[in-house]
Image (cartoon, rainbow, N blue to C red; front, top):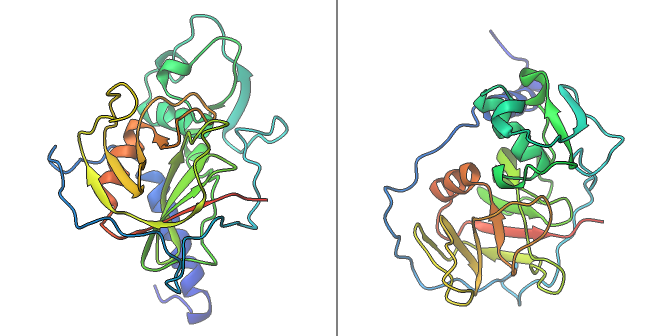
Length: 254
């Protein structure tokens, strides 16, 4: 089939996004090995000046997980009942389970009675929901990890187009994760915290001195000591995808 030039680029972008959203499965880590890296890269902006104190996006901030009036196609909103489990709600459908955790920004441990959540009822439609921009107007290059601190999601982008996304739990009040423009300094598959009781930090990606992106508990809100927490499925995939010196951008949206 011949695609007219005038529609080729948007159509290709849509096809890429469609395929990515439908291919959200587990990705292998890097053979369980620690990765030695070049010395840490300082956080600088594109002009090479001092670190940027804050980066802001003009994209809409509210997501379906926050707004009780917003229910995307393929979902219903309801309250978790006592004794309900993720597997039971989704009838052991792994795709449904992943979507539910991602959209609500919670892991299995935080499926608590009384909590209002979005539940996928039509998996095909639910898979099309994306809470982050499909394209960046201010992309920093070939590849970029962008973390949206206000809405608590991240996106992995190639050439400005979204490749995959997931929820985050950033720093709680008083230990806020700093916004700015940084880079992937090094990765470490098995890491433990040197500061907080030897706490496990699987699939760690360092981007700013003592700040990491890694797998950890996901309660649905900012709860960390400053790092950016991910679900296990997203932490594995991002760890495998990310390369040294890839841009990492953390934004506070208005």
